[in-house]
Image (cartoon, rainbow, N blue to C red):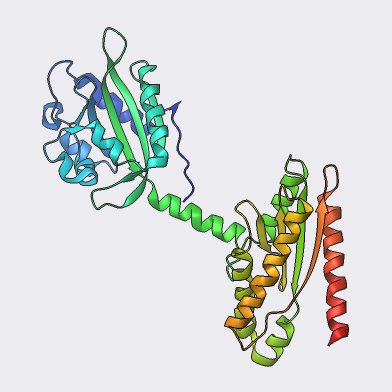
Length: 321
C-alpha cells in the first residue's frame, strides 16, 4: 500500500474530546501514573482504541488500556514503554511523519492535538495502519509537553476497503491493468501538465475474435491476460498501461522522446514473441499504432492519430491473411 502519513494539528473528533475531558481533571503532575490511580480503567478498557499516557520527562508510555497492551505486546507488560522502541515499530518510510508529529507537539498548547496515519508493527509482527491522535494534557512551566495522551485506532480494514474500492474503480479485473476510466483521467491530467512530450500507443488484439469463436470465451480471456502480462513487463514506473475496451489496450508515456517510444514498441514486440514461444497453442497477434504529442498538441488529437495508425496496420494484417 501507498503511504498516506503526515502530522498536523487537528480538530479533535468527539470521542477524543470526551476522553480528554474525562482524563485531564484527574492528571497528577507528579509521579508515574497507573490506570487504577485515574479510576478510569474500566472505561479505558471498554474503548475500541488503544490508549496510553506518555510521561514526556521520562520518555515513557504508561497507563495503557488493554488494547494498547495487546497492540504493543510484552514490551508493555510492565505498563511502561520507552519511546525509542516505538520508532522501531514504525514502518521506515513513515518515521519522518512520526518525527513531524513529535515536533508538532512541542508547539501545542494544553488540550490541543496532533495526528498522523502511520503503519506500525503490532505484537504479532503484522504491519497495521494506525490513526494516531496525540493530545497534550499538561505543559511544563517552560511550555514543553508534560503529559501526552495517545489514542491509536487501527484502520487497517478501512485501508484495505479503500484499496479494494480503488481496484474496482480504476483497474481492469481480468488483466490487472488500469481501466478506461483511469486512462481517460490520466489523459486529461497530462493534457494540462508539464510532462510533454507524451507518447501514445494504441493496441488491438487481432487474434481475439478467432480464439473466442474457435475455442470459447475462456480461451479468449486467457489471451487477454497474456496481453496484460506482456504490457506489465514492458513499461516504466509512471507509464499508464490500460485496457480500454474488449480487445483494445492503450499506453501513455510521459516525458517520452520518439526513440524512447520506439523502444517501448520494440519491447512489446519482443514480449509477444517470448509469450507465444511459451504458449504454443493460441497465438497472440496484435496491431499497433504509435504517435507522439509535443508541447502544445492536443493529446486527444494525437490519440486519434495513434488509433488511425493502429487500424491501418490492422487492415494490412487482414490483407496478408
